[in-house]
Length: 313
Image 1 (tube, rainbow, N blue to C red):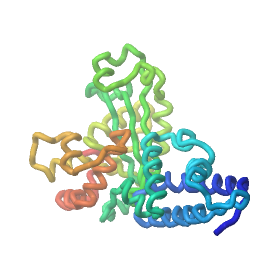
Image 2: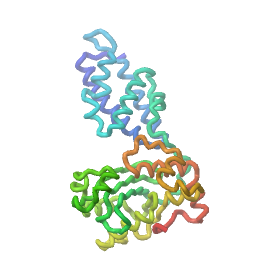
Image 3: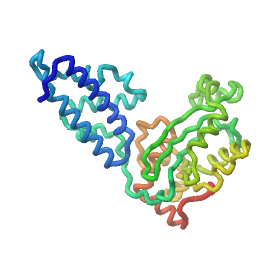
Image 4: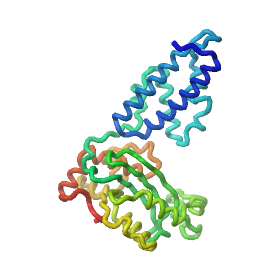
């Protein structure tokens, strides 16, 4: 039992609460089982210490209401602690569970955050990183003006997420039809205030290295758009020669029902839970995990007798 005055208890809880929330954020995005266990152990230690606080000038162990105000929210609020709405909801569920069962690991399992695990990532050992791309485009002409949205998820060779993001490409309001905007739920502000060509170029430059594996759902289309954009800047060598892997081709190879050769069909086939996915690039990431777990990636590579498809072929 740790004895504190009310003021010292509040300060201790606030400091511990910040650490607890940050650990939860790491837990939410982690897909490495060893890392998750380490995070949960740390969270359990912090939780147990908080539960054993005795407030001397009030003569009792810390109340639930005090833990909520001082510890779980770090004397702040969920809105200030979390930018991501889904993460905030999961944290609230986690808090209610751990207050009931007093077990961080059990609470985590019940909330079932990011439960995707991988069994064999040896196919990716040769790469420094893996870049999953998703482009929303108008038509089939390979030029930047036809790219409406740019989504990406950068992984290391163990398939841990390093970076993840999505943004709209800047367009004049007359360049995109009302029908397209309505169908894709795109607002005028999103396209008029999107990122320009310079931002896209420097982002690609930051994400791509000589040992990057490019992945998408229909990768030939993605690499065609990227290559034509880079040619305009005389930087086509940036992705020239990079290995690519097409999730659509893997899906087609392992599923013979031609009627469902679509992203929606792949999601259903691999039983993907898209509840926490804000971007298609994240859905591709979960597909990659499931395809790796089921060894569909390994079988596909073995069948074509190559490490990965090259140059978008």
